[in-house]
Length: 212
Image 1 (tube, helix red, strand yellow):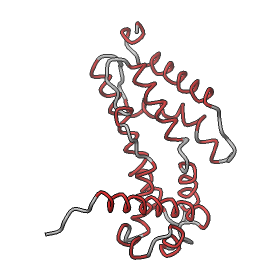
Image 2 (cartoon, one colour):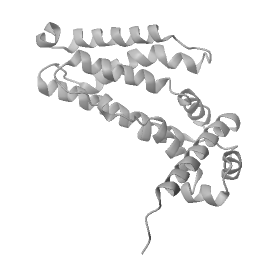
Image 3 (cartoon, helix red, strand yellow):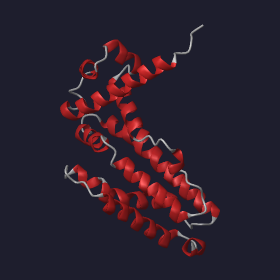
Image 4 (cartoon, rainbow, N blue to C red):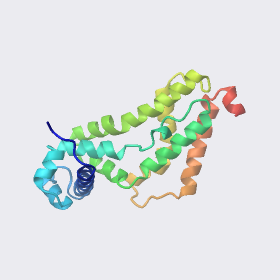
């Protein structure tokens, strides 16, 4: 009967996994997805090929893991704030979105996908289905909950989610794709979130929301 790995072995495995994904992201950006082999990744990560293959049997599986990890939110409460206060809930989500978009490596990951999309369209599909869409759906579900609670009137929560996230990402993130040195300061990013929240509450909030 197999035994459970010890805490030490789990920690070592997690450290090796992190080293592999960090090395892979760096090599994908430097050499492209096609120009990066699993052998090169293992060497850059300082692990054996057997160790890498044990965790990621294919390059596609490794890229899937990178995308999933890059969009992971540690504190789920920041994506699912309590309903009843639309302004506060959207502020919490907006700030979390800024933190996510400015996370080290996020812009690099997008550049990899964009650069390799003509030859490897599956990379775009992976990034959409494993990263962006699950995050988008979590925000949409929050707006659905506010609508059900009567604190917002939303006929199309998918459209409202697109509007809210778009108002933030169009300042915080997308200019980075063309301007590598684009780095708005904390105050300007906070202001973008506040203005996006005000726009959303003005458009979709109920009289109860406005009174709060």
